Structure formats: C-alpha cells, structure tokens
Amino acid sequence: MNKWAFVSDFDGTISHQDFYWIVIEKYFPEGKQLFQQWRDGKIKDIDFLSTVFTSIHQDEEKIIEDIYNIPIDETVLPFITRIQQNGGDFYVLSAGTDYYIRHILKKYDIRGVDIFSNEGYYHDKNIHMRIDPNHIHYSERYGIDKSSVVRTLKQTYKTVYFIGDSEPDVHAAKVADVTFAKGALRSLLREQHIPFVPVDTFADVERYLQEKGVLK
Image (cartoon, rainbow, N blue to C red; front, top):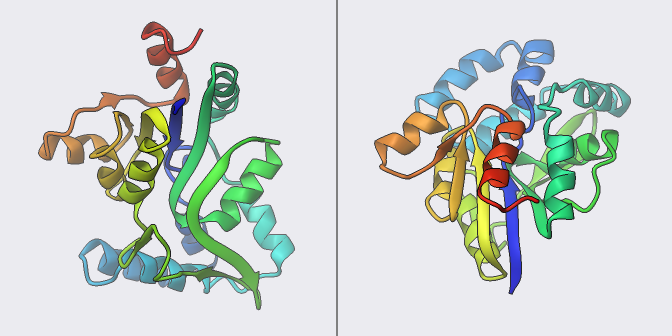
C-alpha cells in the first residue's frame, strides 16, 4: 500500500474563482438567473454547468486564453512539488471538467498530477461534457461522485488528505482521513459535525503538514 495522497478540489480551491463565473461574467449574463435556480435546488449541478459551458460561443484559442487568465493560489505550485518530494501523490478532484484543469496544469508546467473530473472537450465553439452513467464514479447530480473517488484512493493509500471549499466537497470530506477547508465548506462541515482543519492557502496546509512531520 502506498504511503499517502493529497487530493484537491480545483474551482475555488486551487483557483480563486470558479470557471463557470468567468464564463457567466464574460459571455452568458443570463447565467446569473440560472445560478440562482441552481442554488435553490431547481437544477442539478451537472445541468447548470453544461448549460453555462455551452454558452461561450468562442474560438478555442479565446477559450484557452480565458482559462490561462484564471487566477490561482500560486502557493499550490511549490506545495505540489513538496508533496511529491516527500513520497506523496497529488490529485485534482473536480465536479467541473478536466478540460480547463488540463490547460492550467500545462500553463504552470505541473507534472505528475492525475485528474478525477468530468470529461470535457471543445466542439463547435463551446465546452461540452461527456458524462458516462456507467462510470465507476458516476453521480447523477455532479457527474462525478467525490466520495467514491476518495474511497477508491483509500484502498491504495494509507492516508488520504483532502482540501475543498464548497458543497460538493462535503461528500469527500466525510471519507477523507484529514480534510482542509476553505470558504463555505467550513460552515457546512460544522453543521454536520465533520472534523476539518481551516486554511486559506496551500501555504497554510504546507505549514500544518510540516508541523505534523508529514513534510520534511
């Protein structure tokens, strides 16, 4: 059994802004009303994202430019390196799509990181999502079941750390060995009495793991 793994959400955790908000603000103002319907539980997460991502109507070069402009917590870059140097594996776990995540990894030359996310691809000036109901980690609501992914990783690793910031991350937090929480995830976990470590950046996580002797 491998030593340990660190699993991170992407939107709002590695990035400072969810990609869907970038799309709504630049190309799809009607998405603000759709967002409220989603938050009210009238639309499934996967349906909300699919509608937003197919409302871009731009050439792929422009979409990639927008992706490259996604602001990220740049303390994640040395953090990933330290994880790997100390025998850990780093994963990105997102209920968005791997399309923009792969471009971000490429921009920052991040290597040795696997992605668990909904498959995304460019077609006809938009980003489309390919959801497989027969996939082992399928979720009807999110496309990907984060708790299922973490459970599977726990079959391989002695310890699985997780970090997230919003409601879909609650499900992963329930099964991770240690959860680091940003933003709204903190109150959500408190409500369900799920233990967590509050953090704001990956530098905070790095200090915690160093104090615990996980990072040398």
